[in-house]
Image (cartoon, rainbow, N blue to C red; front, side, top):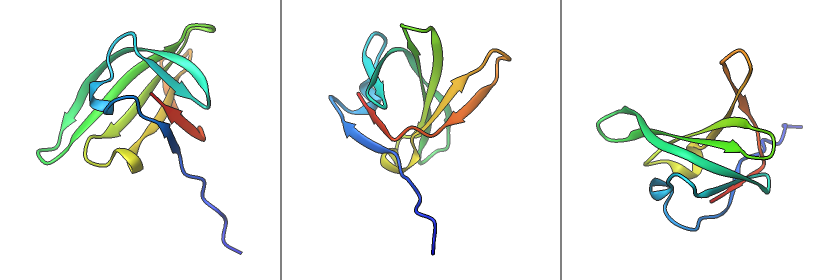
Length: 97
């Protein structure tokens, strides 16, 4: 039997992800985070690789939301900043903004 692959579900989009800005809310598995900033990581001519930096104000953990602007639904990845100044990929079930 093949293993079922869980995919990240985008529950709600209050506006296009490219318009998310500092101070906006971003939800991971229903937990509210705050957007610090969004910026271009790399321009690949036909697409842009973007990063949204967010933080959890209740525990001061920091995260990055990474995506390609032309493949939003399938490219969103979440990374958590660890104490060693290293990002580790996380596998949340849902995101919203």
